[in-house]
Length: 135
Image 1 (tube, one colour):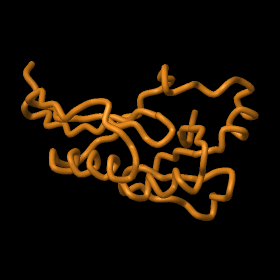
Image 2: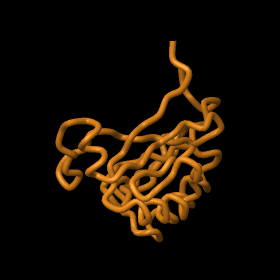
Image 3: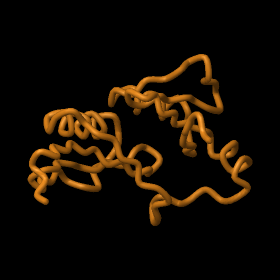
């Protein structure tokens, strides 16, 4: 049925958003990037996250952009290869101007943390060792 899946996120400033996400290790397809949008590719499957200026995003969805200072429309989760990588991504996000909304926590089989980007979108970073999962 579907060949590809991507997410669309509103941002206030494309250049600042690109700098933020680049600082935490995300990559961009520059052929699909301009002053109003940026194409970010995540993971081994190259899931696309399109960043759009709020005006462009509002035009596409024909609705108001969520005020992330008091609500969350989506929680984005990414996996890490190690616990150390969780901590590194979190530290890089903070150094690039983001904030921590979920301190690192260990559930035995899963270790994770959460950060908010420059526009208040919330991201989970998770390392999962399913061999430690109790059945």
